Image (tube, rainbow, N blue to C red):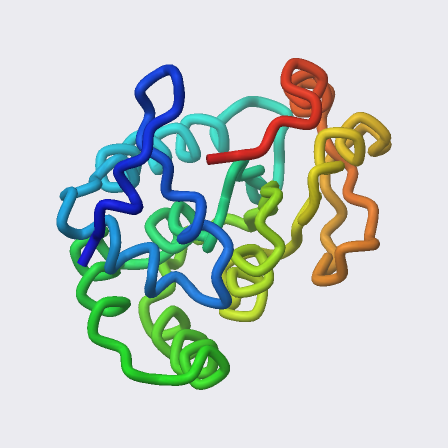
Length: 195
């Protein structure tokens, strides 16, 4: 259950939840946000699927569409985009699990594998939350990660141009080829923390 410690606000009035964004797994995230009925990923799910579908139909662009999920945290958008799941399913799953973080990762590998959609999209994550992105990689939600530190935007600016490689980018040191529009987005908000 959320506590008053989560009700501290920034000067702009935004409520801060910093302590739930970089845990070893997403249980604190879902348990804390459930009482607030946080649903943005639910509303974005259909939009992301439709965008992916339209993007894959563009002429001259063969092969699967690769998605860069900016501020990916635990891979929630990847879970919703690539699996037959709803946000309510994720709340139920993560608010009832009584496992160690490593046991949960092993459980989640099977949980997601049995629900994977045939039109699943390779996803690369970008986030400053190293523990959260590690969970998303280990659970199989993300193919790779850019960042994992406050230097994520600098890494994006330095990345070579072009399409992402087809190889598996599970190690943070790997360089990922990103299209120019992603590199431009990184220049717009250098050194800003997601969330």
